[in-house]
Image 1 (cartoon, rainbow, N blue to C red):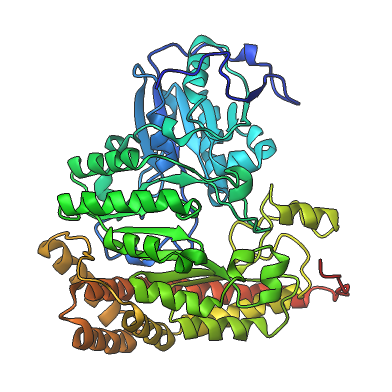
Image 2 (cartoon, helix red, strand yellow; image 1 turned 120 degrees about the vertical axis):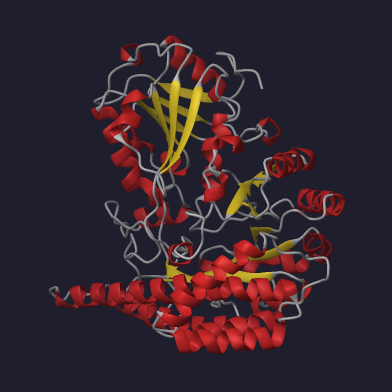
Amino acid sequence: MPPAPRDSPVALSILSTLPNRPPSATFPPLGENLNVLLVWPRFPPSFWGFEGVLTMLPEKAMTPPLGLITVAALCPPSWTLRVLDHAFQDVTDEDLRTADLVLVSAMHAQRADAIQILRRARAVGTRTFIGGPWASSDPDAVLLEADHVMVGEAEEVFPGIALALQDGSAHALYRVDDKPDMSNSPLPRFDLLQREKYTSMPVQFSRGCPFQCEFCDIITIYGRKPRSKSPTQLIAELEYLRELGWRNEVFIVDDNFIGNSKNALALTLELEAWGLKNDSPFSFYTEASIDLADRPELLAAMVRANFMYVFIGIETPSSDALKESKKFQNLRKDSLTQVRVIQAAGLWVLAGFIVGFDSDDETIFQRQREFIEATDITWAMAGVLQAPPTTALWDRMKREGRLYENSEAITNFSAPNFRTNLPTPILLGGLSQLLFWLYDPKAFFDRALRSLDTWHTIPSQKPPDLGIGYNLKVLAASVWTQGIRSTYRKAYWQYLWKLLRTHSAHHTKLWMGFTVLLSAHHFLIYARQVAAELEQDVRKLELQAPVEVPELTHV
């Protein structure tokens, strides 16, 4: 794609003079032949980090930074590019010093490590540039740490910004007001990655979501009008991965894959045809709204295209909480029934759940537990409601005087960043108990076995084939780590015996069942650690001077 000209029609706001910042004229030209270091900061341990699983695998991280390798594809060909993933690679002072430009992308959860990397780069005199979700949602904070900040999406403007960096006309802040046409998104630079270090490869088909959930920043960052690549574009990315030798899972990272269901159907039909032609080299997983259950043609096409599982934001069984948060799509039908439809069609379901809505009372924790057990959702991420910057919830909490703007919360296991109706000790204590319930070894493995029974696969679904040597190595690591050394080894062997007895002749269910077995070494340990930390937080709150909790009006 040619560079965006200086008078590009894309709405691009630029600010060269900012409070406590030098004007852009003080940024000297970097020249054409740049050495650029693209850094993906480290995540703290998290529910979806699968840190415990990675101790038993030859891989070192779950997925690489798709945003960074997409921006890499927008860089001038004269730039020398190197990607460093801080999840498993050191970022040394020498790396930072020898680069002409350090380019960082970060999510909100990565901000602590991103700040350290930016500060270290500045300390050795290297220019810094940051974009991504954190920069887009909190540019004022990011401007304190980086020389150049981009708010918004890069496709239609970064080539022009790159030229400005080269010739010395670059600005401190770029704010992209328009949402780019996804047909302008380039083929990501998968070749820059150490691909053997990852368990799955990410691709993106669409951005944006049509819904209006009050707590969601996806709709404020990427918009409510879903924008898609063409099926031909995405298949070209998959073909490139296949040519590079990739054979493991592919994560379609769309925040709502079915945001535009017509486009999603067109893609899945093309994926099915491509898979038949190429012996289904990849299995897929993605995220979707629960109304996938109401789209039988799309659901069936996804399964035929070799999708294995799907993440759904169920959030809560409380209709009052769904109404107040404007998650109306989850109110149209019974959520339990919809989960069953998706499972019966051929997709294994994992889901997210939230406590701390204004309408929640002390019964919500038991109600969440009962719903999760009834749906057999094994990987159930239950956390506290947070109000991310830019969201309608953030605005409402600020308007009502309930927002803690200096909150250090970085995960959904932190105390909420606003004053909740349910007192914080009760909220954190209830979540702690919910996590203990859900990730008790027996409860977890029983739910896993039931989930395999309710998951109705079709013969064409095919898990990744990584070879007998890989599988035996991972099995040996699992037996040693989980079956011999773990505290839950009795439940491990009971589950493994039942899995083999029930599904040994069903290759796909056996693969999923063993994946769940490995995941236990993350979820059972991590959930217990979080639950214990939540209990400590509750005790600290109880030791503080008692404060009267005001009665708040539900909005």
